[in-house]
Length: 259
Image 1 (cartoon, rainbow, N blue to C red):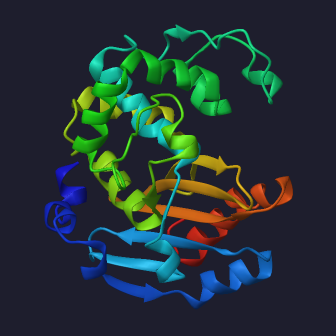
Image 2 (cartoon, rainbow, N blue to C red):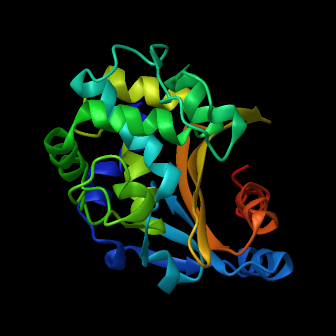
Image 3 (tube, one colour):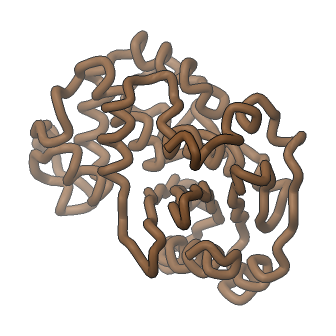
């Protein structure tokens, strides 16, 4: 893995504004055709370059919503809030907006269906102080946890930009976060989505349901011995907008020649 990420140490000491940015007219056209107001950024680790659409928005922080399930899982495993990803956690017994959330389940299943109450239970087990310390160690966005441990990634004050998401995921893909390597490997396993023509895709969606809401899709592609972390966010006015996240993200990756 070291060979894949030789440029990573230098990359991670550079602030996002110091990295070269290249606009992609192809990705811009995809957003226009989809009628989507948002940004897409891909981090080319080897070239230390950001490529995408709407640089200003890519640097703007938003609530991460369910994309925080990635670091939440990593933190939970590291501090022992769960012993392993197949340990079953309770959802709490209350009615949920999505029927499939109304059952106890493991993190392996909960991250797939983006089960909010199960991940809130995980956060409560981690506890506020351990959560605050871990988020700061990760240098995740503004690293603000606030005073309520089970909703700071849904309502704030935690916020992160698309560029920061890509930088965080570059470190996770390389296994260079300041957390145990085994825990990072388990998280990578959970967010692996599919393989296509020699490329492996990892990702997680998120949806902050404001007015408008913010829809996320973040992850990375491994291809030909290199990793390409990416992040998409867009305004979401209704469920049909939310449904555009993954197809638009995949189309953007194809336009950039990595998937």
